[in-house]
Length: 348
Image (cartoon, rainbow, N blue to C red; front, top):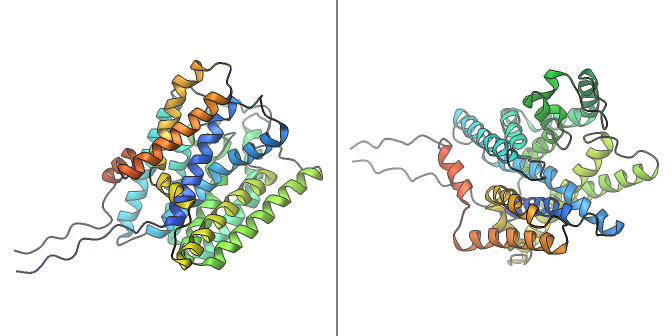
């Protein structure tokens, strides 16, 4: 009788990657609580809070690309694609469902789901191809948004398109959404996959991400001062700022994690963020649902609902991850997805 082969192990968790994911979802929680205090803060505080708001979605896209690059194609190309499709559809279903609730959040899950479905098959290409496509999309993206918006009878950053085809969900999610769209998130997804291929222990790459991201961010501020502000979401000035924020945050988190690993000690701040990162999807869905009763309970807003909402959401997610493990939605989506490799039959 032949002995059974060892069961395939799941990809090991990477502290820096989990912490970057945790940072992205915490930034989203803060951004979604911002309307409670938007009229009560100074311009300086609002500027900082808006950077947190602008960080969340591009960092999520970048981290998703890194995660996809780590596991795709895996033992089987077809199974890798199937897993990506199932996960993408699950995110779309959750996102569309959350949009039906009464809150002020611009839900991103369905757009991230479509991003996974569109982006994962591209990862069969080499890294140079992925970087080339990313650069081409960044350069051409604003022109595509402008052309499609005007073809639909609208004006970018102004009048919404009125043509029937322009309200098709796929058109909106791919190009016309006024907050985020696959067209401008896909470059970060592809860059993330390339970063995964270079290895997540490459400290030099992390520092390049940090410095390059900061350079892009400061360039966006300089462009604004020189009279080239953001005109519409997804234009070059907007991408320069948001992509810069995402790359800088990712680089800082990964460089911190790598330095801690070299010293043999886990960086204090990254541990809690990494725990939250393991339940990011559950936290996202739960905190949006929590806003439904909280918003009408505090019609005048204020610091109490802002701080209470953020603290309760983040602390509950940390406690779940710390004492119960993976989030319920993470477990559910993983069980729905095809296994990375087929079960092998063992001869008797």
